[in-house]
Image (cartoon, rainbow, N blue to C red; front, side):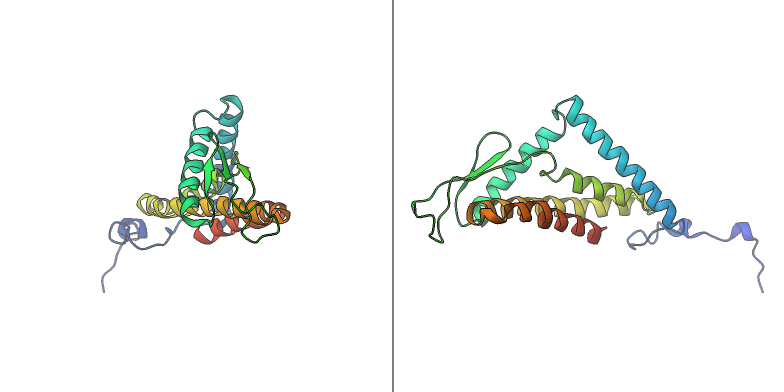
Length: 196
């Protein structure tokens, strides 16, 4: 029988190098600690984002990111949607009215415009994911891999959300409030929680 002093027993943290691909949190996991840290990180990130929007008119993060989202949504929309769309300014997308001028026609697309603003650009979902991943007591390499995988997924999902709203506005304008306020936002939050 071999006696081992308690101080010399390797901890799970010492083996993290060998198990860095294993998607598990360290033994320091404590639900109240993780929830508290998550809420603190989310409050700080959201506060910084709102301060940038209000004090600097969004010139550093919000407006450039929204321009990028608008540009990407235009490119993807012209591939996926059954009608042409165009950017109208930095943060506005619109549809081209088609040759069918009969509004009762199933193919009718009027002159529809969607403005992508703070809240519609998807930054809040990215901040929610960032705070959630950073709050978990996991190795930094794993946190960075999770963020590198999940943030582009959320970006792409937000582009699809914008295009779905543009489609709804062009083809079913009576549903836009429900689609925007309840369905689209709810889907984004659910996906963040599922990915986290």
